[in-house]
Structures are given as structure tokens and as C-alpha cells.
Image (cartoon, rainbow, N blue to C red):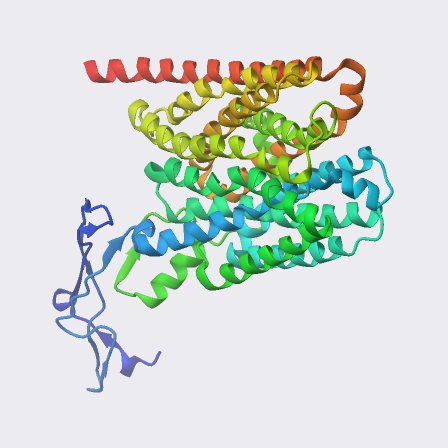
Length: 511
């Protein structure tokens, strides 16, 4: 710079910017305390020796800027969040509904496609395997590129695969299209749980997750209830026509009612549209990177995570196995029920899951507050683990009553108990995992989904041959023992965490 343009600045006369973070009212009426900061800035004009003056428009004299600090969980109204939650719950309904809508028609599919019961059951197993495998992929994609458009792509693939199922000429085309369906629809559960993490704070996540899982848990029941009469009246292919219609409606709802909620992208857009406000608690402080899908499997080495994923997977897998085999048992002697009656018989199980899902989320949040959210997050699992013991009890009743072909009330009681035990634990485990790994919510939910559905696929694949060798009662005894082990191991770890927290808090209180 030339010497005749030498800048002269009087630092004492420099204007100041006052930044005040106001008390922010959240939707519950509570307030977040704000702060005030004062910063010096460059002068509003620059004077040079030649007498010329340049005015800095952005920094006028007497300038005072007020910046409000807001929580990312309060930038939406309760109504907006409820609309998102309701839409996502409807979308999550697709996954179990798609798996069970054609269960009453398994015999009809076997006859129509001229195949065996084994191949038809394999179509269910492949669907479950692909749901688990692709959940890892959708989790990584949505963590990097956002929730909304990832879900839209997945739902579009699902609609196309369902159309292929309608016109499947043989069992191989049917199995392949079902595999694509399973891979695509798994996005609904993984991304849906990540969306809950994006828009709801930790203290509300248990109850909200319970509501989110409500349609998911009654999907296995609504599926046979609708699929049975459809198959009876119009043939088994009509169940997939109905599925295409439902999935298209869900896709349109996703486009209209669900915005992008990924906290990084929301924060960027919010700061651009509201320069006088600043989000203070977004999980993502920098642009997320795409992580290799299999990298999230490293969570299975974490002892604060794997025991609870294991208990979730064991209860889920045994529930799905019992639901899938019910149709076969009820078609045989001495029951010989039609597709319509079989669909109706799933209703008591659905009522149990509906009740348990709401109750599980609510008591999970209560337990979290009681044991201390930050010091002992495992505390929210206590009620769910205690009540999940209904699952092994139900498995014993279910297996042995079908083994001896007793009155129908026996298997129904067993099915109700094991359904209740699984559904009441599910919201607690899901909310716990997203609290432990908030920055990778979709990835950690993907691992849980992967474990659940792969475990269900493995058990269901081996169910028919193993059951034919050892019998129905002993087979479900084996399933019961797996559940007892996982529930017991997880409970021991939770008790140790609570005791450790107690020993940590007591000396602090004495000081």
C-alpha cells in the first residue's frame, strides 16, 4: 500500500457490538437463561491522510445487534412436530405390515406358484435379512445426505418392487422382489428413529419413541387382519395391490408433511434465514461425512450397547417367528381355520402390543428421571427389562400348547404375553441407543435394526427343519432359553450401572 494512503484509527472511539442472548421460552413454558457479550469492532469509517473517507456500511456508529440463542428442539411448534411424528409413524407401519399382510395366504401362494412351504417361508426370511442388511446402508446415507430425500428414494424403490410381486410368475421372481422390498422398507424404521432424535430432546424421547413404534407394533396384526379377507375374496395377489396403494399414499405424505430434519442442514438454513438468532445445541457442529455402512457394526464391540441390542434382537426374533408360524399351525388339524379367521386371531396380540408400546415409552422416561438421565442413562431400561420377562413365559405357553394341540385359548395367551414383553422393551432400548450416540443416531438405530431382523431371519430359516426334528414344544423352549439369557445378562449390567452411580453420588452429596 502507498504511504499516502496510510490508515489512521482511533481505537478508543471504536464502536461496540452488544450481543444479548435473551431468555428463550420453549413450548413447555420453561426458560433458558441468556447471556450478554460486548465485542469491539472496526470503526464505522476509515480516514486516510489525503482526506478521503470510506464508510463501512455493515458497521455503522451506534450499532447494536441483539442475537437470540435458541434450542434446535424449539424452532418448531408442537403442532409441526406432531404432524411429523404422525406421518413417520404411518410410514413405519409399512415394514411389519408388508411382512405379515400375506401370512394368511401362505398356503394359497404355495399352490399358486407350485412350490413348497419351505420356499414360501424362505421368502419371509430373505425379506427379514435384506431389511437388516440395508438398514446399515440407509443409516449411513441419511446421516450424510439428510433424512427426507433418502426416505423418498427408498419408498420409491419399495413401490416398484411391490408392483413386481403382484405379477410374479414363479417363486424365484417372488423371492427376489420380496428381497428388494425388505431392503427398501427398512429405511422407514432407521430414518424414522433418527428423525425423532432430530426434533425431540432427550427427556421426551422415550414417550415419543413409544408413540412412533405404536403403528409399527400393530402392523404385524393389521397385516393378517386385512390380508386374510382380501386373499379369501380376491386371491393372494390382491394383498400386494393393497400394499402398493398404501405405500404410494405414504410416499406422498412424506413429500408433503415431512421437512428435512437433519440438524446440520436445519442449522445452516436457520442461520441463513434468521441472522439475529443462533442455535446453541445442534448435535452436528460440522458437515457430516459419509461413513462406510459396515463401520457402524463396531458398536457391537461396545459393552454399553451390545447387551441391550442383544435383548432387543432376541425378543423381536422370537416374536416374528411365532407370528410367521401361527398361520401354518392354524391351517392344520385340529384347527383348520380359513384365512379370514386366522387374520382375526391376530387381533389380541395387536391389542397387547398397542398397550405395551405406549406404556413402555412412558415408564422409560419416568425411570430415566428417577435414576438420573445424565449420570445413569441405563436406568430408563429397568421397567422394560423387568416386564420383558413376559416374553419367555409366553414362548413356553405358546410352544407347548401348539405341541399338544390344546384349545386355541392356550396359544393365544402365550402370543399375548410374548407380544407384550417385546413391545414394552422396544421404546426403552431405542431411546437409550440414540441418547448414547446422538451424533450418529441413524447409524446406531441401523445396527439395532440389522441385529433384530437378521436374528429373526436366522431363527425363521431354521425353524421348520429344526422343529420337525425336535418338535414344537422343545423348539420354543430353546427360544425361551435364549431370551432368558439375554434379559438376565442385560439386567445384571443395568444393576451394576445403578450401583456405581449411587456410590458416585453419595460421596459428592457428603462433600
